[in-house]
Amino acid sequence: MCHMPGLLDDNLAGLQATLDRTHDYAGLLLLEGEARTLERALAHSPRLAALIGAILRRRLEWEAASIYLMERSTDFLDNLELRYDAALTAIDAGTYDRGQLVIQGLGPHLDALDDRQLCGLWRAAPLVGLHDIALAAFQKARDRGVGFCTTEIEGRLATARDNVVSPILDEVGVVSLGENCLGSVIK
Image (cartoon, rainbow, N blue to C red; front, side, top):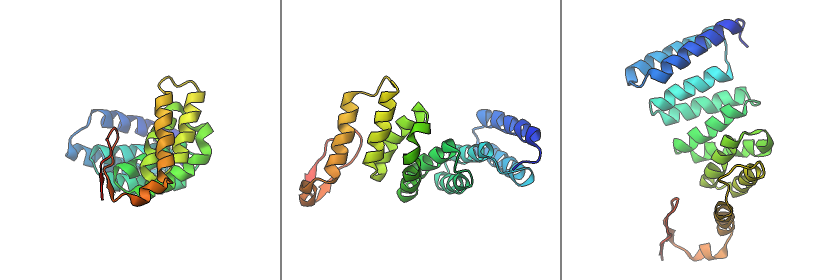
């Protein structure tokens, strides 16, 4: 924990403002250095961890961001935003097993997630084979009245879940995958 919360908040606000206007690689490297110095000097905090993760993502260093956010999310298990960022960044990094692990951990906390996070989960969870969590997140968002939760989307999620256990898949050699992609089968 931070021994000087006001100083941490002031520094975080300044670093976030700098990140908002920094897009060049060299500037982002300097900014990360400042953030890491703050992390070592003052404290580990979920807000600072999220900022460092955002810096790494802005530099397109998805794997480094994924590893960092995963490590920090285990330090702050009650911070669902950090865990959500860790899950989606792992998927962006192509580290599906890491993303799957974090999404599984978020599954029991759907009631505590905000609408944006629920929508992100019902889009990301199927990518790592977690169709039941995707459907549950969708249904939770729909029950809250999120406007774009249509029956068509729910049908697609249910079909994807059902397809995973379908015996016909045992006969298929190759299926092209992708969102809005028509499947083609090669035997």
